[in-house]
Image 1 (cartoon, rainbow, N blue to C red):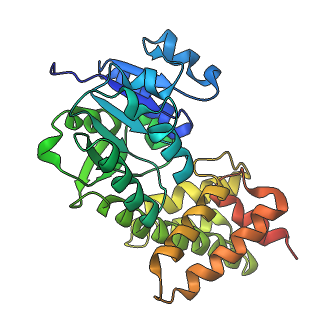
Image 2: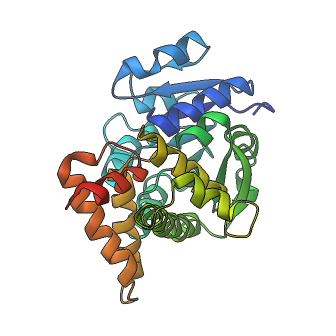
Length: 292
């Protein structure tokens, strides 16, 4: 293998597309596949090879990245007819980078091992949303046999600003749910607190400037307050995907009682049912403000 591994990116939503852009910018040979081919056309103009199937994309790849919304789709593009595992070379690397849940990840690891015991499975969801993915600023929560997959290092360097290795494959997905549970709690808290500030006669700017520079001034909070203040909720992380992750975290928690997250999940489900699922998670402020 050359010093620059060939990478196949399967799934060109906001995150996968951003990964492919940054892989190309780093000079890594990049192959791409997406069900909707039109989403790959700009990547083709930038030098990516657009492929007709996951198998086709994997045939010349050292590393296959999957970045799709859920476990069934991930299994299909890896293990189904014309799936990537049919084409991937011996000792190739699969990097599963979507948020698909704890048990589905464990099941996928088992199924890949059964079908292709030679393949190195790296479980590596990311902390970050659309803009960080486009800017190469996500944090990769990697897990698996790092020593057996040297080709993955330049890939993660291209798509993210840091890689946090968590342990054996599957640990990355567990940590991702911890991180996203915190993010979901924070977003709901920002939305409700912004409403309280306005109820008590303060603007959103007043609220931010009061905490700015202190330990409570989380940068993520400022980003979401700006979206709330502008009334523009173009999705960085869609509310529907936030709800999915909340439910995955609750499922993974098992018998652990998480009453706040359960309440948030119920509220976000109502907001999605009300038609807000494609907006950014900060749109929950708009839903809470207008539901009465």
